[in-house]
Length: 399
Image (tube, rainbow, N blue to C red; front, top):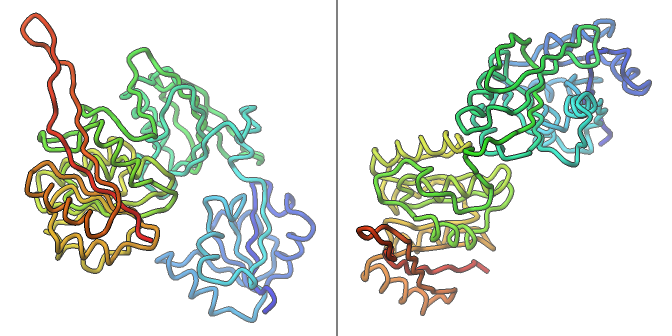
């Protein structure tokens, strides 16, 4: 089937800024779908005008209802870069769509700042939790962020301040490429600009000597997590995450997640990684939610329930960590649900749990190791090694 749907990126310069081919498509359309701003930017197009449907998920049905007509969807900038084009492309075959990209807000912002696109991080908090950007706060990191509204830059400035990055330089760019383009410059610790909504924020992260260092690789310090003392400790957590192998968009089941330290680091470890934490204790789920928000992964999903019953009906995972509730029934359910090439890691500290892991290793193979960690602590006026509880760890990949 030939393409009947055209998704056209449009900028602040409106229809005059389109390529001749894209302009012809818009002007010949019978149906044009977009937001109020998009319709205003293309007001000389002669077509039936449709606003974004509510709820937005009804968009695909709206488009399908006009199949057979010349349909155009207007999007800001590049329709496939944090925009509606990707959503449509997941539901309508690519052979039925023609994309007409415009210069994106990221490209325009990089040009205004004189920054190389290859040397920065691009992210969006538009319509998403602002806390997502926290995971990207690192020394000398440059960020371009599509924001939610006029208040978002101030929220991000507060995140930077709280983590010792108050000297970070911030620039808000609004209406780029149009007659009303605006720019606001400042630093995080004294940010007080009133800015337009729907802006692009450029941040150059500058760390103070006491700044919190939050790398994306696993093994964050224990004191960065709210917990009740029961948690997977830093050194063991780093080994655990290495065996779980976070990957882009992959899903983790964290069974008996406690304060969520493993799930949080999994989500920080790869772009768009997802995690579901199963934890029967309400107080520990509160800790997990606090940690997820504070460390930049507010989309951590938490489930109240006991294993294995609480696992029924969940999306099939790419990796599973069993840190609590270990039993043969739990393992069986997890192993059956795990996707091919999925990774399973079980940690045990009791003799009973260790005995079960030894038996499962004998039956299924994999790698069985014991982790012992000693930390230096004061002993009177001197110092000495204090051992943590040894952890028996079994890991395997589903082939």
